[in-house]
Length: 216
Image (cartoon, rainbow, N blue to C red; front, side, top):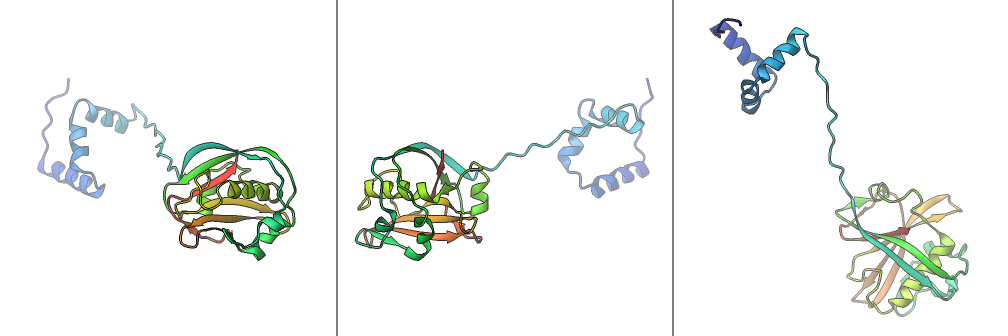
């Protein structure tokens, strides 16, 4: 057993300088002075023990909230070039959207979609980190899916598309330009029509509360 330790003024000053130099707070000093914590540090200093760094696991921020899976039953093939024209109840940016119509194909049957809500304002790149790798729709099937959804909710009816003025987002692959575009669909309660527009992925930040669909 060693003798009692006496903290000299010089040693006390060195300890005080070390504490300030390393930006150590009161809570750390209290931890050091409690139990056998100081002995553990002394063993480390003497080489009788070694320090093992534990990885710090940070909580992963979830950008999206899952709203589950929905099924769109495409019961009737739609002529996309005729459907996606601006008329009463529908406003389409026809020139940008035409990139998808050229590849549209007729097809029927149930289609399963994943639905998510944005927790906060997000860039496309942030949204896509939490979507499956195959999150983009092919143009041909997308035209049939969207036409079916809009038909079922014509006039702003309730359904899978949100109709509170916020947008529904679909990522669609354009095989001609070999890149994705975001298709923005929202209900305008003033003009009483659905708006369909196409956005390039150029750093636009989407508002919180929007919904994004992807193939399930």
